[in-house]
Structure formats: C-alpha cells, structure tokens
Length: 176
Image 1 (tube, helix red, strand yellow):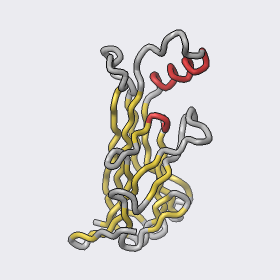
Image 2 (cartoon, helix red, strand yellow; image 1 turned 90 degrees about the horizontal axis):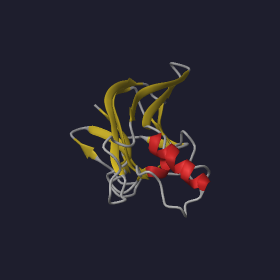
Image 3 (tube, one colour; image 1 turned 60 degrees about the horizontal axis):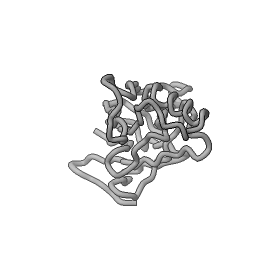
Image 4 (cartoon, helix red, strand yellow; image 1 turned 135 degrees about the horizontal axis):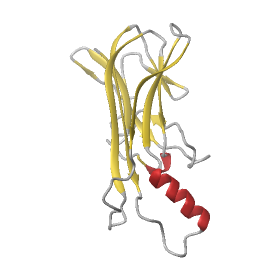
C-alpha cells in the first residue's frame, strides 16, 4: 500500500467501487472500498477489515467521504423499453440520493451515524436533452473524537448511478 505523511498527519484514503452485483435496486448498499489504486492509500496504522476503516489509536480525527452520482432524469425510454425496466427507471429518477458514514465503538456498544446527507436526484426544470443525466455529489466531512478500535463505514443508495472514476467517490480519515 502506498503511504502518505505530511506535517505529522497520518491517514487513510480509499477509492470507491460501486458493488451492486447482487441487487442494484436495493434501497441501501455498501461501496467496496479499495486501497492502493489511483489516489487511495493507507498510512499510520490504519487498517481495513470487512470493508470498514479501523481506527488505530484514540484521538481527534477528520472523517470525510464523497459519493458522486449520475442519474437519468428523463421521462423514460421509447416504446421498446419493457414495462418492468421502465418502472425501475422511474423509481430511480424519483428516489433521493443518500450517503451516510457510520461508526461502531465498543464504548457505545452500538453503531451510530456520524454524518448523513440526502439530495433530490433530479433537479426541477425538466430532463437534460443530451441523455447524460444529472450529476450530483454528496460530500461529508467533520472532526470527531474516536477511540482505538472504532470502525467506520459508509452506506449509500442508488449504487447503480454511482460514479467511481478517480476523484469522484472516496472515503477517508486522518489524525489531527
């Protein structure tokens, strides 16, 4: 894994890969995070276990994530489109986008939401004519006091609409 150290800060940054092989229409899903690809790296004792970042020691950390989406917002396809596919596309167009960062801590004995955001997928004013869909990103970031062994993970809906190219979808944490 590629390392990073700047001014005494140690951190972890992961690149997202949308994983919806089992059920792309699921209301909630988990991104599969990758290290050592593109700008993703690990440094300073951080580990990833079960797709969760494990905090190496108690302290103050900045936790951040971004999920970028491209959602088709038109009125649907032509006559060739099957009824079932059209209904699924309509649900995606009208479902809000959401992205959340969770924390599990032995000190709490349960999971707790650190940050969450919800956005409307399609903007008012009609569909885009170019067929590219609407682009939208949800960015979350804040400082938290975390305990050694705490685990952090994300939950995101609309995985089928997720943009996973470099710099568009990521998750990370660094010590302050």
